[in-house]
Amino acid sequence: MWAVLEPDRAERAAVAAWRRRQLAEAGFPPVLAAALAAESADVHALIELVERGCRPRLAARILAPLEPESP
Image (cartoon, rainbow, N blue to C red):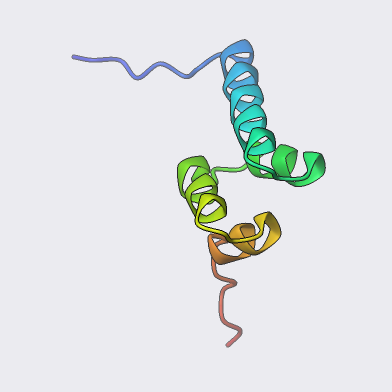
């Protein structure tokens, strides 16, 4: 049986740092890049939107999860 291994803290930090660098290189402001890197945002989709002319903040809003509806 296969065991699912939880990535360690160092590995998660390295992945977040890579995500932050990719977003910053694509033109995302540092604070926004750091916030998106820490989330489960789709970095590739964000960068693709910016490459197609979308502003970084708008790209982040477009791909943000929907707010749950109030009852």
